[in-house]
Image 1: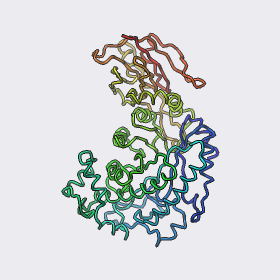
Image 2: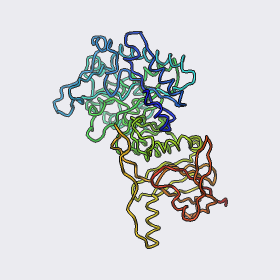
Image 3: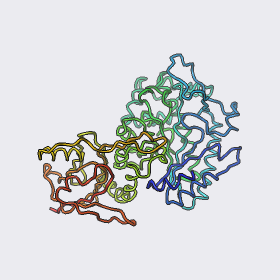
Image 4: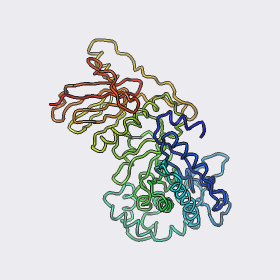
Length: 503
């Protein structure tokens, strides 16, 4: 991390997600070493950064490779998962030449050991992090079972043939009309039973298996979080490797039992100590994933996602969102689109948060020639691409229309060496007063009209570029005449303030 910290600060972040490995902090039973944790806290505080820590405990990406060797060697005390023979050939080992290791989540011994170590970590943070640099914890990472839809170990088989816990069935009954449709379907096909074994209540196919595993993984993660919160009660979340998705249409091809959207209700019942469930987003349907994870009992926070500036603006514009975290952020260029956006967002955060509390923020990313309409307060807003607006003006004037000239050269290196600049018009509209707005983003134009005026344009009192200098918002160029048609630049992120004449 030594060469990384200064770059993270240069990227204009306000929070960094770091990691804690169980095998490194407890290399021997009850012998703890928190030096790597302490260093992260110190380095983050030194640069005015907050810290979210991932607890790489029993599970990381549906495996148990971060578990201390003294546990992994004791298979009789901490038994492994077991899988049915893969007669279909659909389930394949993910890593060629590398053995996969996963300890069963039905092991009470593993739960006790994990909870003990996590509690020690939380106690240490409470006693040493006097500046409250650590603001949140992710408990485990992308839990679930790969290679089969259900664990077939002796402990798991015993649980499968027992009665479904009353607390789960009570939750399902009380939330009947609000259940995710996938869960409602699985429960309904067995006659919405309120008593019985797992097979009797949910069936015996992969969807029933996923419910069974979601309850167990949710219970495991929830119990670990509950133990840690007794020492330090800060927000804790669990993240999901998404599924079903392209090439992974059944549980086991994606981690069975993880907190995917279709299993959110099971996790809510199993893990009340987990404050929210979070999607790791590497799928194309980013907007749909946001919708799946935004609900009355769940804040939106993608803890792993891609450096796509339009998706960033869309996330920040959702009132229930907490942020947007890019996986491998250290490989993102410090002079690129993302760093530019983070610079403006860090400065605008107080304005955004104040406006979001009143429903006065909207984020967007537009497809070619797409127009988006929305309402902020007493105003109707229509956003479209600046290039589309320029083309229309030039066509109206009989001029030749240029091709889209925005850059598409790769940004970054390493993990993101092939990531292209997001060429979509995207940004945020923030209502900062009754007749005043902050426009933040790139490549878009916006039309404002008072609600009920059938789109009649409002007279602009002033429009000016905004700068953030020495901790203060400072006016830049006053924009007038033709400049008011395209105030947001095509190729960089900028902020513009617009104020309309009072009626």
